[in-house]
Length: 136
Image (cartoon, rainbow, N blue to C red; front, top):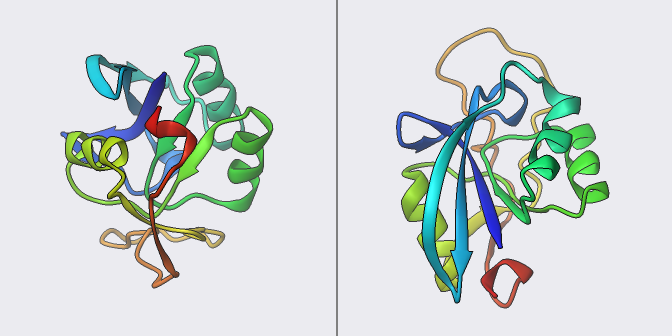
């Protein structure tokens, strides 16, 4: 199984469509066995789901994400954990341990130019992982 995280300087990057790289984790028997940082080469919102599918990604951990990108991920069969922040490695460990907290509707459907806005912090309802597909 493979888990991808929007990635910047060790942290979950806050906006899916603007991420310049993903950290992709290879998981076997519930443990990370390897990881690599993969540049997106500026793919943009629509192409990123295809980019992840090419890498064989099963799950994505990210910050904010728009409804179009959510739909593209769903069509690619990629399980989404949006609204996450903080250390990327820690979020993956929480996902594997069943304790990841994420927002069920961490959408960013507006445009903003200012720094300091985190799309995942819209106060959407939080969900706690239980027995999701990514735990196996």
